[in-house]
Length: 490
Image (tube, rainbow, N blue to C red; front, side, top):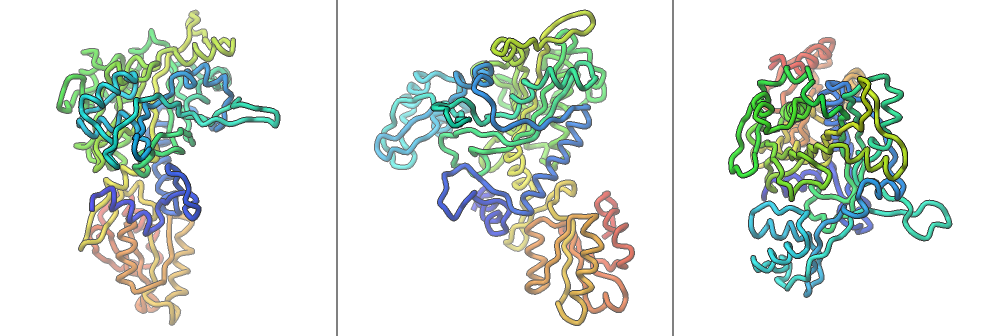
Protein backbone atom coordinates (compact mmCIF):
# COMPACT_ATOMS: atom_id res chain seq x y z
CA UNK A 1 0.00 0.00 0.00
CA UNK A 2 1.41 3.39 -1.04
CA UNK A 3 1.52 6.53 1.10
CA UNK A 4 -1.53 8.03 -0.61
CA UNK A 5 -3.67 5.00 0.18
CA UNK A 6 -2.19 4.69 3.67
CA UNK A 7 -3.06 8.29 4.53
CA UNK A 8 -6.63 7.92 3.27
CA UNK A 9 -7.05 4.69 5.24
CA UNK A 10 -5.71 6.33 8.42
CA UNK A 11 -7.80 9.47 7.83
CA UNK A 12 -10.97 7.39 7.49
CA UNK A 13 -10.12 5.17 10.47
CA UNK A 14 -9.36 8.11 12.79
CA UNK A 15 -11.76 10.69 11.33
CA UNK A 16 -9.15 13.18 10.09
CA UNK A 17 -11.13 13.83 6.90
CA UNK A 18 -13.88 12.03 4.99
CA UNK A 19 -16.33 12.58 2.09
CA UNK A 20 -18.96 15.20 2.82
CA UNK A 21 -22.52 13.84 3.35
CA UNK A 22 -21.02 10.37 2.97
CA UNK A 23 -24.23 8.54 3.99
CA UNK A 24 -26.03 9.98 0.92
CA UNK A 25 -23.54 8.81 -1.78
CA UNK A 26 -22.66 12.41 -2.73
CA UNK A 27 -20.75 13.63 -5.83
CA UNK A 28 -16.98 13.47 -5.51
CA UNK A 29 -14.76 16.43 -4.74
CA UNK A 30 -16.31 17.54 -1.43
CA UNK A 31 -14.72 16.74 1.95
CA UNK A 32 -15.41 17.27 5.64
CA UNK A 33 -12.68 17.48 8.28
CA UNK A 34 -12.97 15.91 11.70
CA UNK A 35 -11.79 17.41 14.99
CA UNK A 36 -8.07 16.67 14.59
CA UNK A 37 -8.11 17.50 10.89
CA UNK A 38 -9.72 20.84 11.70
CA UNK A 39 -7.07 21.64 14.32
CA UNK A 40 -4.23 20.69 11.94
CA UNK A 41 -5.67 23.04 9.29
CA UNK A 42 -5.93 25.81 11.88
CA UNK A 43 -2.30 25.24 12.90
CA UNK A 44 -1.23 25.57 9.25
CA UNK A 45 -3.25 28.80 9.00
CA UNK A 46 -1.62 30.11 12.20
CA UNK A 47 1.83 29.37 10.76
CA UNK A 48 0.86 31.17 7.52
CA UNK A 49 -0.34 34.21 9.46
CA UNK A 50 2.89 34.31 11.42
CA UNK A 51 5.32 33.63 8.54
CA UNK A 52 3.58 35.43 5.66
CA UNK A 53 0.89 37.84 6.86
CA UNK A 54 2.60 39.38 9.89
CA UNK A 55 6.11 39.21 8.47
CA UNK A 56 5.04 41.28 5.44
CA UNK A 57 2.73 43.67 7.35
CA UNK A 58 -0.07 42.31 5.20
CA UNK A 59 -3.64 43.46 5.79
CA UNK A 60 -6.15 40.64 6.09
CA UNK A 61 -9.72 40.67 4.77
CA UNK A 62 -12.60 38.20 4.65
CA UNK A 63 -14.50 38.35 1.36
CA UNK A 64 -17.89 37.09 0.23
CA UNK A 65 -18.09 33.65 -1.43
CA UNK A 66 -20.60 34.80 -4.08
CA UNK A 67 -19.71 37.59 -6.51
CA UNK A 68 -21.71 39.23 -9.32
CA UNK A 69 -21.47 38.16 -12.94
CA UNK A 70 -19.77 41.41 -13.94
CA UNK A 71 -16.89 40.56 -11.61
CA UNK A 72 -16.05 37.52 -13.73
CA UNK A 73 -16.60 39.32 -17.01
CA UNK A 74 -13.91 41.73 -15.85
CA UNK A 75 -11.56 39.01 -14.55
CA UNK A 76 -11.83 36.92 -17.71
CA UNK A 77 -13.17 33.82 -15.95
CA UNK A 78 -16.37 33.55 -18.01
CA UNK A 79 -14.33 33.50 -21.20
CA UNK A 80 -11.08 31.77 -20.27
CA UNK A 81 -11.51 29.71 -17.10
CA UNK A 82 -11.81 26.31 -18.78
CA UNK A 83 -10.23 22.87 -18.56
CA UNK A 84 -9.83 20.39 -21.46
CA UNK A 85 -12.50 17.69 -21.25
CA UNK A 86 -12.50 14.34 -23.07
CA UNK A 87 -15.08 11.54 -22.85
CA UNK A 88 -14.86 7.81 -23.48
CA UNK A 89 -17.12 6.78 -26.39
CA UNK A 90 -17.68 3.35 -24.84
CA UNK A 91 -18.19 3.76 -21.05
CA UNK A 92 -18.89 7.53 -21.25
CA UNK A 93 -16.59 8.41 -18.33
CA UNK A 94 -15.12 11.90 -18.44
CA UNK A 95 -11.46 12.85 -17.95
CA UNK A 96 -9.15 15.84 -18.13
CA UNK A 97 -7.25 15.54 -21.39
CA UNK A 98 -4.04 17.11 -20.05
CA UNK A 99 -3.88 14.65 -17.13
CA UNK A 100 -4.47 11.62 -19.42
CA UNK A 101 -1.64 12.73 -21.68
CA UNK A 102 0.66 13.41 -18.70
CA UNK A 103 -0.08 9.92 -17.37
CA UNK A 104 0.89 8.37 -20.68
CA UNK A 105 3.95 10.48 -21.52
CA UNK A 106 5.28 11.42 -18.07
CA UNK A 107 5.58 15.02 -19.27
CA UNK A 108 3.80 18.10 -17.95
CA UNK A 109 1.15 19.21 -20.45
CA UNK A 110 -0.04 22.85 -20.33
CA UNK A 111 -3.80 23.00 -19.81
CA UNK A 112 -3.93 26.12 -21.98
CA UNK A 113 -3.23 24.21 -25.23
CA UNK A 114 -6.00 24.53 -27.82
CA UNK A 115 -8.30 21.59 -28.54
CA UNK A 116 -6.52 20.65 -31.78
CA UNK A 117 -3.20 20.32 -29.96
CA UNK A 118 -4.81 18.04 -27.36
CA UNK A 119 -6.46 15.90 -30.05
CA UNK A 120 -3.16 15.58 -31.91
CA UNK A 121 -1.33 14.46 -28.74
CA UNK A 122 -4.02 11.88 -27.90
CA UNK A 123 -3.78 10.50 -31.42
CA UNK A 124 0.04 10.56 -31.48
CA UNK A 125 0.37 8.61 -28.22
CA UNK A 126 -2.55 6.29 -28.98
CA UNK A 127 -4.28 7.16 -25.70
CA UNK A 128 -7.48 5.31 -24.84
CA UNK A 129 -9.87 5.30 -21.88
CA UNK A 130 -7.96 4.22 -18.74
CA UNK A 131 -11.10 2.46 -17.45
CA UNK A 132 -12.28 0.35 -20.40
CA UNK A 133 -9.71 1.04 -23.17
CA UNK A 134 -12.44 2.55 -25.34
CA UNK A 135 -11.82 5.31 -27.87
CA UNK A 136 -11.98 8.96 -26.83
CA UNK A 137 -14.08 11.81 -28.17
CA UNK A 138 -12.63 15.07 -29.42
CA UNK A 139 -11.48 17.40 -26.65
CA UNK A 140 -13.79 20.21 -25.52
CA UNK A 141 -13.11 23.15 -23.23
CA UNK A 142 -15.28 23.06 -20.09
CA UNK A 143 -15.82 26.22 -18.01
CA UNK A 144 -15.37 25.40 -14.33
CA UNK A 145 -17.38 28.24 -12.84
CA UNK A 146 -20.26 27.24 -10.54
CA UNK A 147 -23.14 29.64 -11.17
CA UNK A 148 -26.10 30.65 -9.05
CA UNK A 149 -29.16 32.90 -9.35
CA UNK A 150 -29.81 35.66 -6.83
CA UNK A 151 -33.34 36.96 -6.40
CA UNK A 152 -36.73 35.32 -7.15
CA UNK A 153 -37.06 36.65 -10.73
CA UNK A 154 -33.62 35.64 -12.01
CA UNK A 155 -33.92 33.17 -14.89
CA UNK A 156 -30.20 32.78 -15.54
CA UNK A 157 -26.96 32.96 -13.61
CA UNK A 158 -26.37 36.50 -12.39
CA UNK A 159 -23.69 35.52 -9.86
CA UNK A 160 -21.07 32.82 -9.30
CA UNK A 161 -19.31 31.09 -6.45
CA UNK A 162 -15.81 32.50 -6.49
CA UNK A 163 -13.26 30.17 -8.14
CA UNK A 164 -10.37 31.87 -6.33
CA UNK A 165 -10.17 34.09 -3.28
CA UNK A 166 -8.15 36.86 -4.91
CA UNK A 167 -11.10 38.48 -6.72
CA UNK A 168 -12.42 39.97 -3.46
CA UNK A 169 -9.02 41.52 -2.89
CA UNK A 170 -8.92 43.19 -6.32
CA UNK A 171 -12.42 44.65 -6.04
CA UNK A 172 -11.74 45.85 -2.48
CA UNK A 173 -8.28 47.25 -3.22
CA UNK A 174 -9.22 50.91 -3.52
CA UNK A 175 -11.29 50.79 -0.31
CA UNK A 176 -8.48 49.06 1.62
CA UNK A 177 -5.81 51.38 0.21
CA UNK A 178 -7.72 54.53 1.16
CA UNK A 179 -8.67 53.39 4.67
CA UNK A 180 -5.48 51.58 5.76
CA UNK A 181 -3.23 54.67 5.96
CA UNK A 182 -0.31 52.93 4.23
CA UNK A 183 1.63 53.47 1.02
CA UNK A 184 2.64 50.98 -1.63
CA UNK A 185 3.83 48.28 -1.62
CA UNK A 186 0.66 47.04 0.05
CA UNK A 187 0.03 43.33 0.71
CA UNK A 188 -3.55 42.17 1.24
CA UNK A 189 -4.24 38.61 2.39
CA UNK A 190 -7.21 36.33 2.75
CA UNK A 191 -7.96 32.75 3.73
CA UNK A 192 -11.25 31.21 2.68
CA UNK A 193 -13.23 28.86 0.46
CA UNK A 194 -13.32 28.73 -3.34
CA UNK A 195 -15.26 26.53 -5.76
CA UNK A 196 -14.51 24.94 -9.13
CA UNK A 197 -16.61 22.46 -11.08
CA UNK A 198 -13.69 20.10 -11.64
CA UNK A 199 -14.10 17.55 -14.42
CA UNK A 200 -12.89 14.47 -12.57
CA UNK A 201 -11.81 15.01 -8.93
CA UNK A 202 -10.43 11.52 -8.30
CA UNK A 203 -7.37 12.17 -6.12
CA UNK A 204 -8.77 12.87 -2.66
CA UNK A 205 -7.70 16.28 -1.36
CA UNK A 206 -5.39 16.83 -4.32
CA UNK A 207 -8.22 17.88 -6.65
CA UNK A 208 -11.55 18.96 -5.17
CA UNK A 209 -14.59 21.04 -6.14
CA UNK A 210 -14.68 23.00 -2.88
CA UNK A 211 -11.33 23.96 -1.39
CA UNK A 212 -9.59 26.50 0.83
CA UNK A 213 -6.94 28.98 -0.25
CA UNK A 214 -4.47 31.34 1.37
CA UNK A 215 -4.06 34.37 -0.81
CA UNK A 216 -1.62 37.27 -0.62
CA UNK A 217 -1.79 39.94 -3.31
CA UNK A 218 1.04 42.50 -3.26
CA UNK A 219 0.24 45.85 -4.92
CA UNK A 220 3.27 47.91 -5.92
CA UNK A 221 4.69 50.56 -8.21
CA UNK A 222 6.39 48.63 -11.06
CA UNK A 223 9.07 51.32 -11.27
CA UNK A 224 10.04 50.46 -7.68
CA UNK A 225 10.16 46.68 -7.99
CA UNK A 226 13.83 46.80 -6.93
CA UNK A 227 13.32 49.42 -4.22
CA UNK A 228 12.65 46.85 -1.51
CA UNK A 229 14.90 46.96 1.63
CA UNK A 230 13.54 43.68 3.10
CA UNK A 231 15.26 41.88 0.23
CA UNK A 232 18.66 42.33 1.89
CA UNK A 233 17.73 39.94 4.73
CA UNK A 234 17.26 37.13 2.22
CA UNK A 235 19.73 37.86 -0.59
CA UNK A 236 21.95 34.92 0.41
CA UNK A 237 19.08 32.45 0.83
CA UNK A 238 19.24 29.57 -1.63
CA UNK A 239 16.07 29.01 -3.61
CA UNK A 240 15.48 25.61 -5.19
CA UNK A 241 14.71 26.52 -8.79
CA UNK A 242 13.78 24.34 -11.75
CA UNK A 243 14.41 26.63 -14.68
CA UNK A 244 13.00 26.34 -18.18
CA UNK A 245 14.93 23.83 -20.26
CA UNK A 246 16.68 22.36 -17.21
CA UNK A 247 16.15 18.81 -15.95
CA UNK A 248 17.60 19.33 -12.48
CA UNK A 249 16.79 21.59 -9.55
CA UNK A 250 19.45 24.25 -9.05
CA UNK A 251 20.03 25.93 -5.66
CA UNK A 252 20.41 29.61 -6.57
CA UNK A 253 20.95 32.45 -4.12
CA UNK A 254 18.23 35.09 -4.19
CA UNK A 255 20.75 37.83 -4.92
CA UNK A 256 22.15 35.91 -7.89
CA UNK A 257 18.67 35.13 -9.23
CA UNK A 258 17.70 38.82 -9.26
CA UNK A 259 21.07 40.01 -10.58
CA UNK A 260 20.90 37.59 -13.52
CA UNK A 261 17.23 38.44 -14.24
CA UNK A 262 16.11 34.88 -13.48
CA UNK A 263 13.62 36.61 -11.17
CA UNK A 264 12.39 39.97 -12.42
CA UNK A 265 12.83 42.02 -9.26
CA UNK A 266 13.74 42.20 -5.58
CA UNK A 267 10.12 42.40 -4.41
CA UNK A 268 9.23 39.18 -6.21
CA UNK A 269 12.40 37.49 -4.99
CA UNK A 270 11.60 38.39 -1.38
CA UNK A 271 8.13 36.85 -1.56
CA UNK A 272 9.50 33.67 -3.14
CA UNK A 273 12.05 33.43 -0.32
CA UNK A 274 9.50 33.73 2.48
CA UNK A 275 7.28 31.20 0.70
CA UNK A 276 10.07 28.61 0.71
CA UNK A 277 10.86 29.48 4.33
CA UNK A 278 7.19 28.95 5.30
CA UNK A 279 7.27 25.40 3.96
CA UNK A 280 10.62 24.67 5.56
CA UNK A 281 9.08 25.65 8.91
CA UNK A 282 6.07 23.45 8.09
CA UNK A 283 8.51 20.53 8.14
CA UNK A 284 8.65 19.67 4.44
CA UNK A 285 11.90 17.97 3.40
CA UNK A 286 14.02 20.60 1.57
CA UNK A 287 15.09 17.93 -0.92
CA UNK A 288 11.48 17.50 -2.02
CA UNK A 289 10.55 21.11 -2.78
CA UNK A 290 11.13 23.37 -5.77
CA UNK A 291 10.01 26.47 -7.65
CA UNK A 292 9.21 25.44 -11.22
CA UNK A 293 9.44 28.18 -13.82
CA UNK A 294 6.46 28.03 -16.18
CA UNK A 295 6.72 28.48 -19.92
CA UNK A 296 4.41 30.92 -21.71
CA UNK A 297 1.91 28.23 -22.77
CA UNK A 298 1.58 26.99 -19.19
CA UNK A 299 1.14 30.39 -17.55
CA UNK A 300 -2.23 31.97 -16.86
CA UNK A 301 -3.10 34.48 -19.59
CA UNK A 302 -2.68 37.42 -17.18
CA UNK A 303 0.74 36.42 -15.85
CA UNK A 304 4.04 37.95 -16.93
CA UNK A 305 6.09 35.60 -14.73
CA UNK A 306 5.00 32.44 -12.92
CA UNK A 307 6.74 30.17 -10.44
CA UNK A 308 4.85 27.14 -9.16
CA UNK A 309 6.02 26.04 -5.73
CA UNK A 310 5.82 22.23 -5.74
CA UNK A 311 6.48 19.33 -3.38
CA UNK A 312 7.42 15.83 -4.47
CA UNK A 313 4.85 13.36 -3.11
CA UNK A 314 3.76 9.78 -3.74
CA UNK A 315 1.40 11.14 -6.42
CA UNK A 316 4.20 13.08 -8.13
CA UNK A 317 5.18 16.74 -8.00
CA UNK A 318 2.23 18.60 -6.50
CA UNK A 319 1.65 22.34 -6.91
CA UNK A 320 1.06 24.02 -3.53
CA UNK A 321 1.50 27.68 -4.50
CA UNK A 322 1.01 29.65 -7.71
CA UNK A 323 3.34 32.65 -7.63
CA UNK A 324 2.15 35.00 -10.41
CA UNK A 325 3.29 38.43 -11.54
CA UNK A 326 -0.15 39.61 -12.69
CA UNK A 327 1.03 43.11 -13.82
CA UNK A 328 -1.87 45.63 -13.83
CA UNK A 329 -4.28 43.20 -15.53
CA UNK A 330 -6.72 42.81 -12.63
CA UNK A 331 -7.11 46.42 -11.55
CA UNK A 332 -7.24 47.67 -15.16
CA UNK A 333 -9.85 45.07 -16.16
CA UNK A 334 -12.08 45.72 -13.15
CA UNK A 335 -11.70 49.46 -13.71
CA UNK A 336 -12.74 49.15 -17.36
CA UNK A 337 -15.88 47.12 -16.65
CA UNK A 338 -16.96 48.96 -13.48
CA UNK A 339 -15.90 52.47 -14.67
CA UNK A 340 -14.28 52.95 -11.24
CA UNK A 341 -10.85 54.58 -11.09
CA UNK A 342 -8.52 52.04 -9.42
CA UNK A 343 -5.34 54.02 -9.95
CA UNK A 344 -3.34 55.61 -7.12
CA UNK A 345 -1.29 58.78 -6.81
CA UNK A 346 2.10 58.53 -5.11
CA UNK A 347 5.20 60.70 -5.52
CA UNK A 348 3.22 63.03 -7.79
CA UNK A 349 2.58 60.19 -10.22
CA UNK A 350 -0.76 58.58 -11.08
CA UNK A 351 -0.59 54.91 -12.05
CA UNK A 352 -2.37 51.56 -11.82
CA UNK A 353 -0.48 49.32 -9.35
CA UNK A 354 1.00 46.02 -10.46
CA UNK A 355 0.29 42.85 -8.50
CA UNK A 356 2.41 39.91 -7.40
CA UNK A 357 0.46 36.97 -6.03
CA UNK A 358 1.04 34.06 -3.67
CA UNK A 359 -1.95 31.73 -4.08
CA UNK A 360 -1.70 28.71 -1.76
CA UNK A 361 -3.96 25.67 -1.57
CA UNK A 362 -4.68 24.75 2.06
CA UNK A 363 -6.08 21.29 1.26
CA UNK A 364 -2.98 20.31 -0.71
CA UNK A 365 -0.70 21.72 1.99
CA UNK A 366 -2.70 19.74 4.55
CA UNK A 367 -2.17 16.57 2.50
CA UNK A 368 1.54 17.31 1.96
CA UNK A 369 2.06 17.79 5.71
CA UNK A 370 0.33 14.46 6.40
CA UNK A 371 2.44 12.61 3.84
CA UNK A 372 5.66 14.28 4.99
CA UNK A 373 4.83 13.32 8.61
CA UNK A 374 3.90 9.70 7.87
CA UNK A 375 6.22 7.12 9.41
CA UNK A 376 5.84 3.52 10.55
CA UNK A 377 6.44 1.57 13.75
CA UNK A 378 6.00 -2.20 13.92
CA UNK A 379 3.80 -2.16 10.83
CA UNK A 380 1.56 0.60 12.20
CA UNK A 381 1.41 4.17 10.80
CA UNK A 382 2.78 6.97 12.99
CA UNK A 383 2.35 10.66 12.19
CA UNK A 384 5.43 12.62 13.28
CA UNK A 385 4.19 16.18 12.89
CA UNK A 386 6.57 19.08 13.45
CA UNK A 387 5.81 20.52 16.88
CA UNK A 388 4.32 23.73 15.46
CA UNK A 389 1.67 21.82 13.52
CA UNK A 390 0.67 18.94 15.77
CA UNK A 391 -3.16 18.84 16.09
CA UNK A 392 -3.05 17.68 19.71
CA UNK A 393 -0.28 18.64 22.12
CA UNK A 394 -1.06 16.15 24.88
CA UNK A 395 -3.29 13.19 25.59
CA UNK A 396 -4.15 12.42 29.23
CA UNK A 397 -4.50 8.70 29.93
CA UNK A 398 -5.60 7.23 33.28
CA UNK A 399 -4.13 3.77 33.79
CA UNK A 400 -7.56 2.61 34.98
CA UNK A 401 -10.87 4.41 35.62
CA UNK A 402 -11.36 3.26 39.21
CA UNK A 403 -9.82 4.02 42.60
CA UNK A 404 -9.72 7.78 42.00
CA UNK A 405 -7.25 7.54 39.11
CA UNK A 406 -9.81 8.61 36.49
CA UNK A 407 -10.85 11.54 38.68
CA UNK A 408 -7.23 12.69 39.11
CA UNK A 409 -6.62 12.38 35.34
CA UNK A 410 -9.65 14.58 34.63
CA UNK A 411 -8.34 17.17 37.10
CA UNK A 412 -5.06 17.27 35.16
CA UNK A 413 -6.98 17.54 31.89
CA UNK A 414 -8.96 20.50 33.26
CA UNK A 415 -5.71 22.07 34.44
CA UNK A 416 -4.08 21.90 31.00
CA UNK A 417 -6.87 22.16 28.42
CA UNK A 418 -7.07 25.97 28.32
CA UNK A 419 -3.30 26.24 27.74
CA UNK A 420 -2.72 23.37 25.30
CA UNK A 421 -4.66 21.26 22.79
CA UNK A 422 -5.50 18.25 24.97
CA UNK A 423 -7.59 15.09 24.87
CA UNK A 424 -8.76 12.82 27.70
CA UNK A 425 -9.14 9.10 26.92
CA UNK A 426 -9.87 6.23 29.30
CA UNK A 427 -11.00 3.54 26.83
CA UNK A 428 -9.06 0.29 26.14
CA UNK A 429 -5.68 -0.75 27.53
CA UNK A 430 -2.90 1.78 28.01
CA UNK A 431 -0.81 0.06 25.30
CA UNK A 432 -3.57 0.35 22.69
CA UNK A 433 -4.11 3.98 23.58
CA UNK A 434 -0.40 4.71 23.08
CA UNK A 435 -0.60 3.15 19.59
CA UNK A 436 -3.71 5.17 18.65
CA UNK A 437 -2.27 8.52 19.72
CA UNK A 438 1.10 7.79 18.13
CA UNK A 439 -0.83 7.23 14.90
CA UNK A 440 -2.51 10.61 15.36
CA UNK A 441 0.83 12.31 15.91
CA UNK A 442 0.29 13.45 19.51
CA UNK A 443 3.81 14.28 20.76
CA UNK A 444 3.19 13.88 24.51
CA UNK A 445 1.16 11.43 26.58
CA UNK A 446 0.50 11.86 30.30
CA UNK A 447 -0.26 8.65 32.16
CA UNK A 448 -1.91 8.85 35.58
CA UNK A 449 -1.41 5.75 37.75
CA UNK A 450 -1.56 4.62 41.39
CA UNK A 451 1.79 6.27 42.16
CA UNK A 452 0.33 9.58 40.93
CA UNK A 453 -2.09 9.57 43.86
CA UNK A 454 0.71 9.01 46.37
CA UNK A 455 3.53 11.09 44.89
CA UNK A 456 1.51 13.76 43.02
CA UNK A 457 3.42 13.06 39.83
CA UNK A 458 2.67 11.50 36.42
CA UNK A 459 4.47 9.71 33.61
CA UNK A 460 5.28 11.90 30.61
CA UNK A 461 5.91 9.91 27.39
CA UNK A 462 7.56 11.10 24.14
CA UNK A 463 5.90 9.95 20.90
CA UNK A 464 9.09 9.62 18.83
CA UNK A 465 11.56 8.06 21.26
CA UNK A 466 8.88 6.41 23.46
CA UNK A 467 11.00 7.49 26.45
CA UNK A 468 9.22 8.19 29.72
CA UNK A 469 9.96 10.44 32.70
CA UNK A 470 8.14 11.16 35.96
CA UNK A 471 7.06 14.79 36.41
CA UNK A 472 5.44 16.48 39.40
CA UNK A 473 1.91 17.66 38.56
CA UNK A 474 2.78 21.19 39.70
CA UNK A 475 5.70 21.24 37.22
CA UNK A 476 3.75 19.99 34.17
CA UNK A 477 3.15 23.45 32.68
CA UNK A 478 6.81 24.45 32.61
CA UNK A 479 8.01 21.01 31.48
CA UNK A 480 5.56 20.92 28.56
CA UNK A 481 6.47 24.48 27.56
CA UNK A 482 10.16 23.51 27.60
CA UNK A 483 9.39 20.58 25.30
CA UNK A 484 7.56 22.73 22.74
CA UNK A 485 10.32 25.34 22.95
CA UNK A 486 12.71 22.66 21.67
CA UNK A 487 14.49 21.97 24.95
CA UNK A 488 15.59 18.41 25.70
CA UNK A 489 13.55 17.00 28.57
CA UNK A 490 13.74 13.25 27.89
